[in-house]
Length: 443
Ligand SMILES: NC(=O)C1=CN([C@@H]2O[C@H](COP(=O)(O)OP(=O)(O)OC[C@H]3O[C@@H](n4cnc5c(N)ncnc54)[C@H](OP(=O)(O)O)[C@@H]3O)[C@@H](O)[C@H]2O)C=CC1
Ligand SMILES: O=C(O)CCC(=O)C(=O)O
Image (cartoon, rainbow, N blue to C red; front, top):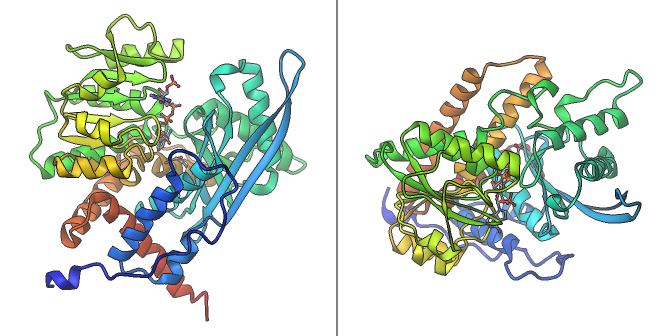
């Protein structure tokens, strides 16, 4: 094939402005960024315009306002979202975020990314995402439970084990999923009041969760990094890493990589950043965060500024907090060889351009963090079949899935001369397109 045959065919602009946003314009247009990647990947994959048009907006955007009586007797109104982007390949699937910055447009971006992730990983799922706009750190455990249950009740039949299956994301965890499952089961579960385990994934193991889901996103990132390292003769043992966000994804990444001889020398969360040139004891720090809620006050590191954190020389950077963290300034400061995106959308396009110019590799979110939804699928299958797989079985399956996905993305990127991110999007889009075409939805 000649280079000119490989060139993306220009296609007309998409219909992204056809539907107005229902939220006020934010400083960072996350959904717009995801649409720009969609355009770029659509051109690389020579995607039919009708497919791109369908995928440019979510199928359903659900907004619920629901009241909760707080511990002091006051009734507060909360705003929750569930965006169902696409369900061509299977039920809508994706996490639930509790965070003060949750907005409809951001949830739309995250829901679209779930559609690409599921397709890339060959899962029989589509994409969805949800959230509630509030700070889970600012309420009591009792209030948190009531907010979760009220939200689930407000969503009602908009979720379901064969329709739309939530999972944890920022600010939520296995406990949140157990409350959601219980509320849904009580609401829907027939006269026998059966547990509808498959309505959510990421549950605690005793409540029908799978072994290996808690660490799955991090484990998938590590498998992806190992594949990249093999391809580039990059010896992981003895390398250093910095991690932004020390919750589920960030802390497990540090713990798993520590076993492979990678030392985490700087970490950060919303309370600040810490540096330890000798390397943190990732296990101890994870334990500390689980008991104290953040890294603040951890005795094993020196407080540093955000700028110092980004300028810390380390071989690997694992952004594992929120979107739009690596902008132009951070991209210039970073001194790593490879970035493994645990967070969704941590690098903005301006930052990405600079990183590319500087020769820093990005293992993109839709590939690198797809271990979470992949193991969620394993959990859903176990729930359907009333099975319990061992952690080894789960890890082995995940390893094979990540190896295959990495190979496909890396080969595509090389052949088509596009970034790993655009390659991952393009592969996903082509799979979705093939199904739309086979089903001949516009006869
Ligand atoms: N959980 C999963 O299975 C998956 C998660 N992801 C993505 O990974 C990322 C992290 O998710 P997860 O680990 O589950 O969430 P958690 O809530 O467990 O952890 C989030 C971490 O990010 C930190 N953080 C929040 N805001 C900031 C900020 N402004 N600056 C620095 N740190 C901040 C939090 O700090 P603090 O606790 O102090 O607020 C916390 O340490 C998200 O982008 C999510 O979408 C992707 C795939 C799957
Ligand atoms: O496990 C899941 O279903 C969703 C994980 C998720 O929200 C994500 O990959 O961003």
